[in-house]
Image (tube, rainbow, N blue to C red; front, top):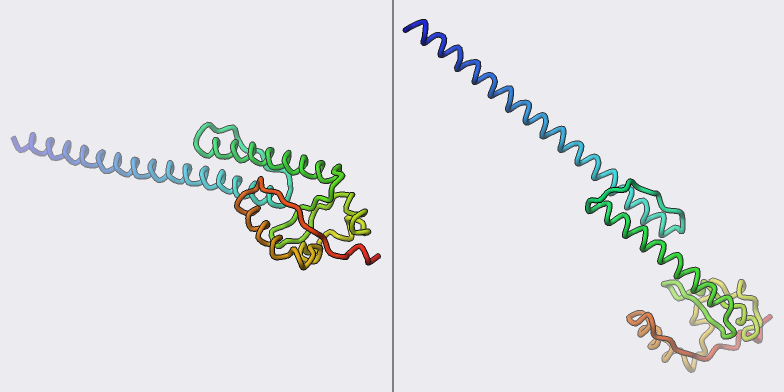
Length: 173
């Protein structure tokens, strides 16, 4: 009986050792998989962030892996959105460059960034000379209050358009 109890204790210790080794292997496997998931996710998120910065700077986007998970879908959507933005900007510029009317594109500070060539007839200045000028330096003082109101409407309703008078910039050469 004593010999049998020794064997049973020895078997119990072996089982206990196997359980501890299995637990350690499970912990190491969980840590390894967690690191892999973390590293893969962070790398792909960095690509999305880099692409957002590249889009902002007007640079080509980094192509990422063809993944079918949430980050892959986000990346594909981001690329499609960037393509739509580029096409829209190209069409807007073409419209401005080919317009018979004076058309201006403004940045967020109200500075002229794109000016139609027809502006030269109205202002007697080349569009390049008007580039960077604030819109308030072009709008007449008698219409400036109405202009600011219309501009606020444009901020909330991008399809809104309006006309306004211009200052006597055409007196300068």
